[in-house]
Image 1 (tube, rainbow, N blue to C red):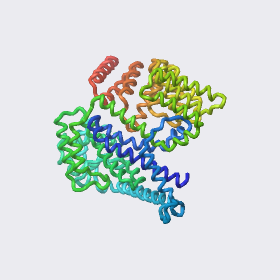
Image 2: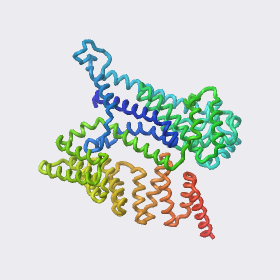
Image 3: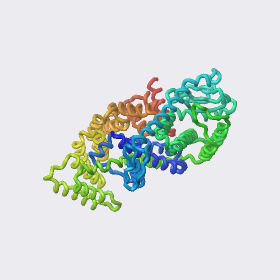
Image 4: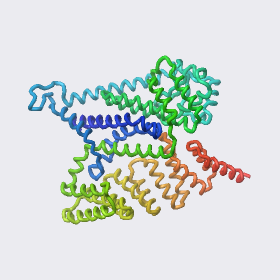
Length: 555
C-alpha cells in the first residue's frame, strides 16, 4: 500500500466516521425519548460497524459481485476535495498547481501521514500508561470489604450476589460508585457508601453497576478511546466519547427501572443527585458526570419506554442504519466494481435494477425485468460471460423472483450464485443463508437444513450464533428435538459469552425441545432464566408446573 493510498484510506475513514458520529449525536436524544435509552446506546455501533466494513471481506467481494452502493454526495465531495488538496503537493513539498508559484516545504503526503501516526501512537501510549498505572495503584487507593460490609452488599444485591463479575472495593475517598479496569474490572464504592445512601439506594446503585459489568461497557468505552487516539485531531471523537458514556448510563438507568414504581424512580433520582457530591473525579476512571448530564438522566426517568412496538422500531432503526453505514464505507470500491463488467452490459443491468427498485414496481414490472434479463443472457451468449457477470445476472434474477413471491424460482437463481462464488466465501455464506430462509418460507425444512449445514462449512472461522440457531430450527421443524438441542445450547452459550442477553424466542425453542426430550431439570433452569430476563406470568406458571411434575416423579 502506497503512502497516498494509506492517507486516502485514513481520510475516508475519518470523514465517514465523523458523518455517522454526527448523525448519532443529532438523533440520540429523540431516539432515547421515543424508543428507549438502549437503542440510543446501540446506535453507537453504527460508526464502529462502518469502520469494520472497510476491512471486511465483503469489500473485496463487492469488487466481484453486485452489492448495492449508497451514494453520499456530500461525503464523497469532502473526501475527494481533501485528497485533492493533499495530493496537490509532490514529495518535495512543491505545489503542483500551475496557478501557484510558491509552495510549502512541509505539507506533503508523507509528512502528513507521519504526523498523523506520531500523534496516534503518542495518544495510544498515554492511554496504555494510564490503564497500567490504574492497575498498579488500585490497591493502595482502595481496600477490600470487611465481613460486615460484604454481608450488607450481599443483602442489597439479592439474586445478583451469586453472579458477581467483579470484586467490590472501598475507595479511600468519597468518589464513586464506578466500574473501572478493563482486563480486571473492579467496582469501586465511595468510603461513605453505607452512610450516604439508604439501603434502597444502595440496592439500586449495585443493580446499575452490575448492568455495566454484565454488558462489558468498559470494553466499548475503550474502543471509543482507541478511536479518539487514532483520530486525535477530530473534535467529534472527544464529544462522541462523552455522549457514549452518558448513553451507557441512561441505558443502565432504564434497565434498572424497568417495571419499577414511581416511588422507586423518585428514590433513584435522589440517588443520582447524591452521587454528584464528590470533590473530584476518580483519576483512574476519568469520568465524572456534569450537572447537565445528571439533569438529563433525571429528566429521562419519566420517559423510559418499554413497549414491544418501541423495541421493534428501535431494532429496525439500528439494523437499517448499520446496513447503510456498512455499505457507505465501501463507496471507494464502486469504480473498481464497474470496471470489472463491460460498460454496455453494466448499463443494461443497472437499468433493470432501477426498474425493480422503483416505487411503482409491481407484478408487471417484475415480469418485464425477468424478460429483460433473459434477453441480456441471449444477447451476450456468444461473448462468453464471466462468472462475475453471470453471478450479477443470477443475483438480480433471484431478487426479482423474491419480490414477486416466486420463492422456488428465487432459490434456483440464488443457488446459481453460490456455484459462481466459490472464491468469495463471505458472499457465498450470505447467499446460502438467504436460500435456507427461503426454504423455511416455503416449508421445505429438509432443504433448509441442508443449506444451513452447508452454510456452517462455508463460513470462515467459528460461525455466529444465528447460524447455530438456523440449523437448530431446521431440526426443530422436522421434530428432531434431540438433534436441535445441541445447536440451541451452542447458540445461547456463544451469545452469553459475548456479553449479550439471549433472545427470548431462542430460550423458548430451547425450552420446548427440552420438554419434548423429557429433560425437566434443564427445562427448569431455562424457565428460571426466562423469568429473570423476560418476566412474564406465563413463564412463572410453566415453572410451577414443571416443578410440580418433578416432585411427582420423585415421589
